[in-house]
Image 1 (cartoon, rainbow, N blue to C red):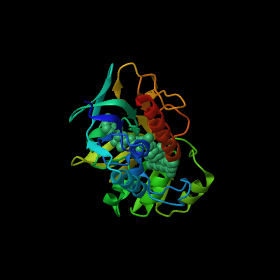
Image 2: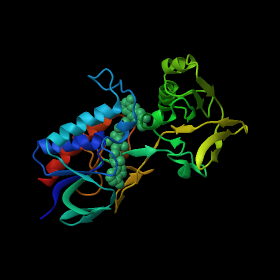
Image 3: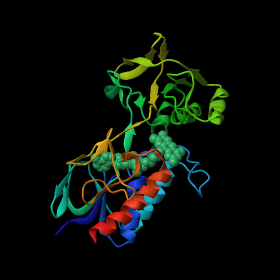
Image 4: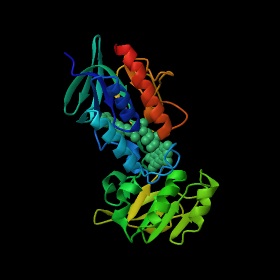
Length: 296
Ligand SMILES: Cc1cc2nc3c(=O)[nH]c(=O)nc-3n(C[C@H](O)[C@H](O)[C@H](O)COP(=O)(O)OP(=O)(O)OC[C@H]3O[C@@H](n4cnc5c(N)ncnc54)[C@H](O)[C@@H]3O)c2cc1C
């Protein structure tokens, strides 16, 4: 006897949507998550491109969806998935807390923030370095912080932090930010926000095992207590024999089906052109309704 019909890896918006559709179809489903439910939603301060809701913060949206699936009694396991094993008549999802057997798997394990790749970056994580201003911003109340990145997320992060911190330096490696004019104009009018363009961080300074500053390519030093890295995302690999991927992203067809029997994928982990909440939701629903036909 198998533990579940379907196991969903990842409790982000894609995985939670799949769970919602499957449980409503009376499927015995389990979501496995290694962190807090919500995934990247937990990092978003203001969502205003989600149809029907003019403005909502990410953690609230995550909580609402999670509550919706918990009310349906979707099984939830807090564990890190290490590998998916394909056997002829079942899948084995191997986790750090034991194996789970099932008929089919939906991989919805998303992406994680890209690191700077500097020597002491990992060591200083949580000691001055952060990848999420919504999560950690208040730790730097009235302090000086830097934000690095040149896309919308970096600008959003800098605006958010300018309301909490004493001073915010926004560091961009190019002459221009890759985002809408409107938000670029907004940051110009913030008194405690200084924009530094055409530069990169080459060294992280530390004192007493905490970040104390950064050095830029022109050797300029900026003293700061926090550094928020907003340089985009990279896919999180899941070990699964014969699964087709491109640059770490899983290749799926229009039904979210991978090349491996009864394994589907959805959300930010798949190879696609748009990485948004709305697309992740659509793909979560598509994966659920198609894997359902496969296991029946
Ligand atoms: C700062 C920021 C701002 C954004 N702003 C917007 C916006 O305004 N509008 C918009 O539409 N989109 C926005 N996005 C993009 C949007 O958040 C994502 O496209 C969407 O949340 C992806 O959802 P997902 O479920 O595919 O993946 P994720 O949210 O990444 O969820 C994947 C989950 O899988 C879990 N996981 C990973 N590996 C394992 C494992 N081995 N075992 C168990 N669990 C695992 C992770 O912990 C995570 O919880 C933003 C993203 C960021 C980071």
